[in-house]
Length: 97
Ligand SMILES: [Zn+2]
Image (cartoon, rainbow, N blue to C red; front, top):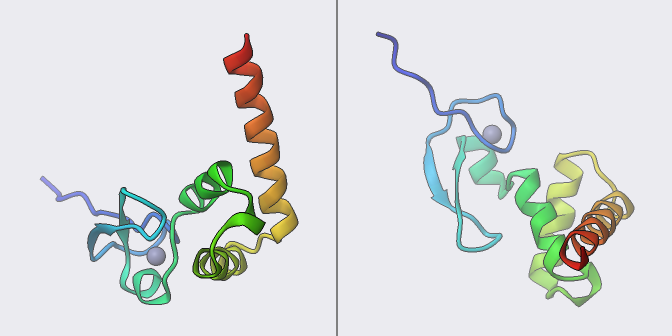
């Protein structure tokens, strides 16, 4: 029986070197060496931060980390803010219904 490989949750390509705590909060992800060394986080975790706090209200370290990751995922800050705006609007409709 072939052993299944743990794939990096950031690039979704390389084999992960392990599961480590995230910079985004109390959660762990599988990272390959390249993504771990570069400080990348899974895109969903980056977006999740944007759901909780407006980008402008985040501390400088979080803003830098998000901008660094958005470059990796080839996303703009405006796209990031729009995803958070739409997701929060959908959530508000859900909780108000
Ligand atoms: Zn990776």
